[in-house]
Image (tube, rainbow, N blue to C red; front, side, top):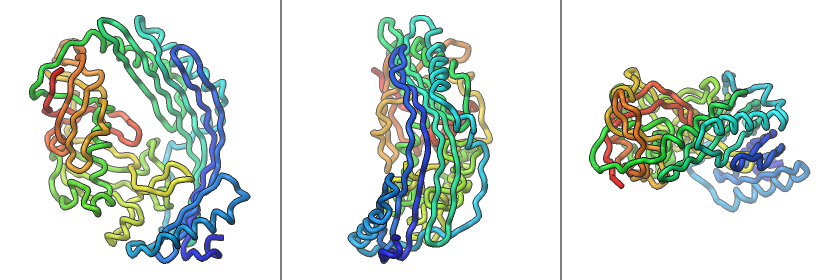
Length: 425
């Protein structure tokens, strides 16, 4: 239909799926829902200009095709456009579909949520504040006018709990679990959230200075996503909005640091056989032994640089155009060790305000959340409030890597340790 309306190239991205959600409010089940979705998104190309339209109504396909072509014509020609992707062989990833999640019913999700509540309530002096469990199953496909015809099924589950505890002050604790396969025991998620809240009350003030600071995986990921990741996306590099624009081949991290973006990681939250444009997923070394090896591309930005896409076009649904994004960013080192056993300084579990980091310079100034004084052979002591300031590129260049690897959204990382500036209360 798009070609008949005048498109030189066209692409359809489609999704269909089901989600079962349970929302918790304090110690009560607030909502249980089962929802279904399906829809198609069309990109139509006219003289290098890309138009887009989408629908969840399968009786409106003709008007969607015409709207996408009209949109392309209205935008005018784009000299940087090369082509939609061509067909290529894709690999089948492992552990991204669980038939148990695919067939799960609301009553099963309720049982999982009650387990999580039970774990939280097991910890005395802590109370559940909010949380939820979601199980999602679906398929997506890409078809384009160059012959790409790809489809794939996938599943995921998401669970989270926030707990609150009161002492001389009030503290909260959070915990979560995300996976592509069903975990039938969420008791530990609720218990960990409550224990974090309890351990964070009655904190003392932190004095300003330079300290060894351990960033647990969630905290480190928050800094990476806002201060570092934008600099490795090709569109920011091409527009001069990346600190790393002229640094390919330079050492930008510790000589033992490796960062890989892998779209085929077994069971990864960002794992699929192909990206949002139908490009085969692959593993891309971004930093290797501290050296910057490559940036991440989709088809459009790769065409501008005369390169092939790295398979990093992602979509949040059928109603969105593809954009550059992470698949599974994996942080690792050949010299990893248990950081907490030998560190005297601070430990930080999360941040407030990480989104205020400068994505170009890498500078950040953030409030630490659930932070503690730590020392070998001593119990951690809570800190009531403190700020951390620094630069992500300086941090990457001089940090130690731990062994407690955890997947946080699309990033897989252990804790890291670095000398950082602490701003006291």
